[in-house]
Length: 627
Image (cartoon, rainbow, N blue to C red; front, top):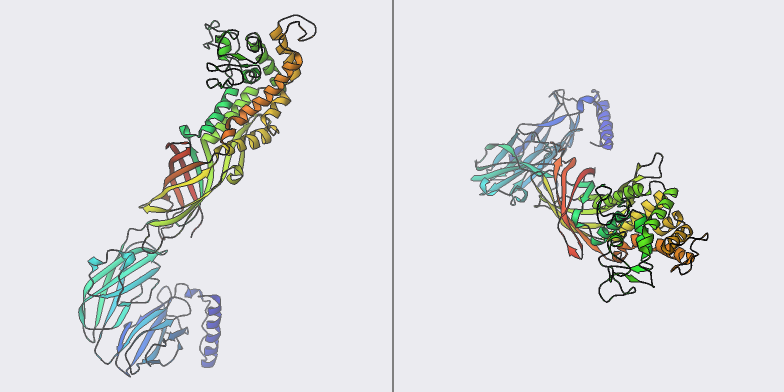
């Protein structure tokens, strides 16, 4: 009962008590918690025209003790056919009873008299007025289960068997239905039932709006002027766990071999930048017995040397190609193996930009690598180790994407309790990296960003999921995504900008490497002549300024090679298609509400050109709110 009603009851009770000199009813009396109203006698009454009967109730507390002086309201509907009550309100006696007289009208009518206590559920008298002899049915309900049944509906059928009532959610139209009750303690009643021997009473009980228990009895016989007692035991129904609500999902997607080609290329380039090994010039045998043969260079010097060298020499060219047209399809960035295995002066697949543009590198590449590595390490100690860690963190963030999302599950439509409309919306990505600039170095840092800011075009999908037992099945649904933009966003915004403070890779390398120093060393290595002025050598095929320009161009190209590894895919929309299952966890036994999504499993595919079907993942769900 709301506060306004309590205050009104208190005022009325005070006025009645003052007029009668009785003890005042206290609507705030703690004994009223759990108070209930009981019908004295039968809840089903058949009356002849003009006949009068007494309608009596008893008001008791949770222990069954009477509550005195409580105002009780009696309400007669407008369709009562002229029937009338002797009073619309009366107070309970010291024994907790209250009664009014009902006088029937002079025409056929069926109606309920609603009786309302100050606190507690209403009760109903089922009334029939007729000039013929009719019978009544009074139902008593029992339930031995432990579900919180908070709505009980009772139906009366004629000529319908219990065996035909198989779909409890879609019961046929009944000839009569008793007022809904909030407890199985109610005694539904049907007055004015014609004489017959093939009546059926069905009782359906719900918890949280879901059908939870059912009972039925058929072959009921009704005789004139007699009350037929019907006892019905409710049995638990198989009900799905109540998944309805808004769920926060924590998803881990393992893309494994299903990475988009663009992402695979990018990660491969980062790996090439950090695949460090020693430089000892071995070409044909493992002379130093270190288990590494052949030695193809040391990164990042080898990677930068590779890109810088491409300014004067292209190799792995197809037959008929020249420097300008060489496609280098078999030559990965950072791979200098051919410098160790081929004679670049006479090797056909090596195409020079100018005479000597390839051959000179056979003598200069080791020195150039070492000088670049020394320069980088002076400015950024342990570059390879730190960069390798960051590259590994980025690859892991992409391969094992940590994404949050919101799953909204709506309540089912009538008759489809196991089919639930859903909306799945991707929200944020979480990336954890080891920061080499922290103190101490390598501290883990977590970055969260909106997927909408990172190239995801469609973040929401709608479908209808299903429930079988305790398993929630999320059907296949898709999102249009651009992984190229996602990877560049993580690389630029987190690794370059947040960690190192640069806007692009070329700027980072240009700040670390002194191209004047490197250019001079390149000339010294290529020219192989002794002079006090670096690179001042007659007949040298390259000048210090040209070498410096190649270094600068090479650094820019190196940055472009890293970030541009997926540049061609930035306008390529892919489709992430997933399906999943989860188990109900922490189910509330009283209302079947699920408190957690456990053992969530994703499966699906990624489409960027060729389709794959080996994406896996896991997720957990915590409720934000119930629907």
